[in-house]
Length: 405
Ligand code: NIG
Ligand code: FE
Image (cartoon, rainbow, N blue to C red; front, side):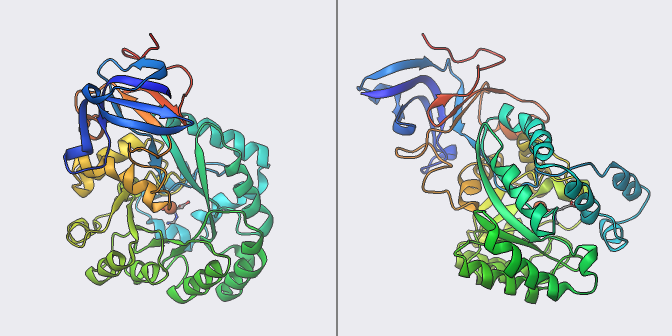
């Protein structure tokens, strides 16, 4: 006996050989918060305590946003205006603006305030069927505020939160011209106290050098924390290959990544996380090497990169559209990028990202005629319900909701 059953759903399982792993006229059962049966309705012969009629809605895995900076204080609208007048993101950062201006506001905010503002922002993720969100620290750059950000992230409600320690995001003013000392401080005085699922860094001219990142990664390995990297966003410092050398879960951005970097990622099983929102908002020209990523079989994930400076983007669905229009991903690649490969970028592929027996029952229901519509419809939200750990999240809204008979 299964706990619950959804009938009359079209399933985009994102597993198997057919496009989207699609099963039209499917059935999906859930038991103890896990998927316990998936297949065509005609093959279902078991019993379930509760039945839901999905009325022809499409069901996908709950979406995964594998790269965000969702916890922060203040905004950077003034910086946006400066950029529109011609200043570049890098110029603003070098002049003492950029990331460190958000740091000042985040240090001043209380933990409760950070939770409150992030939870308000998070409403849109919840409304768009997102089941897992990764949240980075990195606007503290001192021990107290980095830990405060991670605590705030873990307090967010309504979905699964994965936290990433991003102490090496920018150099705080008190360490001016002492980047090596700052890395030592992060490694020895903050990382040991950071409760996080992974460690990340910003490898860039305005961030940290490959050597500094390597020091941090060696320390992360000592704490048995997997690593991720903001790599090759504005220039090619060999970030992708560096991430691969440390078997990173993911290397993110990748606009300037070389073929050699792509090859190294493929060999290491490192996921490419593309962030078209930042590319768009910074009006970048150089596109990530999508063709090479495909050729070498590197899994491609897509994420919002939500942050106040380079991507004040709050929609993972719109991110799918941007991935297709700006980076020429197919709608199927875009959906894989926010499900199967997004989960892989967080090391959650055993439990999340596809509709397969044994995986967690995080599901999203959509009133659409085909799964390509998720990437096609700019700014629309066809979500009509979400199931988190086998339970319906809130009341389904809009359209013709799936209802219990
Ligand atoms: O992923 N590149 C570094 N970090 C963020 C931007 C952070 C900010 O500008 O506040 C990013 O783009
Ligand atoms: Fe980022």
